Image (cartoon, rainbow, N blue to C red; front, side, top):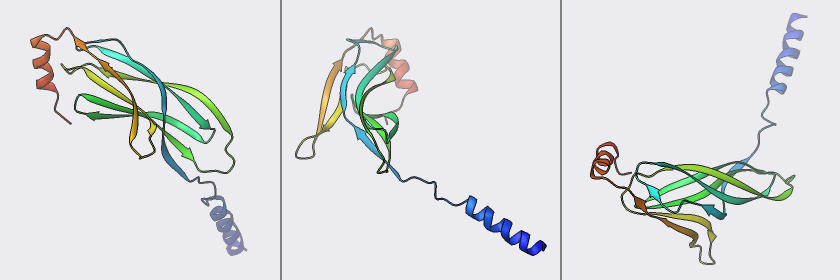
Length: 150
């Protein structure tokens, strides 16, 4: 009797621990509709920037910022986890994401916000140049000592 009980318990345990509830997913870039950046940066200060983008369906979750250094330029995109499902409902919901930028370079920042690709597969960007002011020699030397190029 104990053996039968053990076998039944083992079968129930294995069935309850199956991976049938797992989801397939991938990551996808979402085009940025608009961005808010300051007119200028004061060297050493931290700023909040924000982007607006459209969430196409309820299968897009956990959006985050992709922030890539390209010398003095910063390429910015929205990256979203997409659950692969046939039960997705179209919502076309406008969302906003904010991120912080610490102004630690002497030259102007060029922000390139990804808006998709053209017919040749080349990226299309919404661009903003933000000058950096109040750069003291002391602060510039402090930057050189504490930061390395990526």
